[in-house]
Length: 372
Image (cartoon, rainbow, N blue to C red; front, side, top):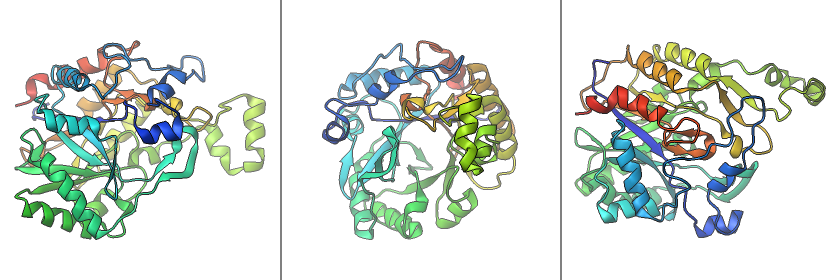
């Protein structure tokens, strides 16, 4: 690669107890409970994913974030993108990033992404049961940006041309996202802060062209839950879903995929993604994912599993996709890795017992000496 990139790893701040999770899932719940309960569903299926170097950490201990940042920095990661949970002034899982702001350590770049969706029982299959509803108003937009200003002013906060980079996970949920973006920019400017606003481009929702037209500065290629996912053929069993009366009998008799999982070949997916990425003609930050398998979140059925993922395929995906990518400008050089620590999604750069540092070594080989 003859261009200099800043790899950003998406970070889930879930791994510490909070009162809400105690109420909904049981005292002391964190996603580690889901992670360790996962079981293989077919021959060669890698589950459960067990952490090695950092163990089953508790993010109430700021020392954990310091060690994570050290591990990331030493392996070519430029910074973290923390998921941020705001529900009309109510915060969830805010402790790790607030501790980061307060302690001024580690000296490691970071940014925020507003995970603006309803909090549901998706972890046990109850997607339709809403625990906290995400509602929107222009007054709330103003209060929200006021809360965020201290983060944007932090010297470690990731910027493009001195503009703080802030991302929104599901922009299609807003009644008028263009008006919200205008309020964010206006309120931030009153505090001496300029914003660079991004949207995640996902498999569902608006296209990149549409998101740019709404007022976003750029979009983030959210892998593997991306537009490419819609282009992948499902398994035979998934295709037979339209025959709902016989679907159950087919799976039962053939003993194929009894949990109705969607199983996708990682190599096939990455090849199609590379070809699809060539067609993008709008400002997009390339995205990648080392692996994906949300069996532990979908314990009963309907898991999305990428089989045959491996560090060498991850490296090929990155090098091939970036080989024809041209930076819009010198500072618009972000790429996003999903994720640093999505353990319950089977999606992590953090070392596990199986792969150890092999995925981090890919990042180290490609990016460590190329970050200015």
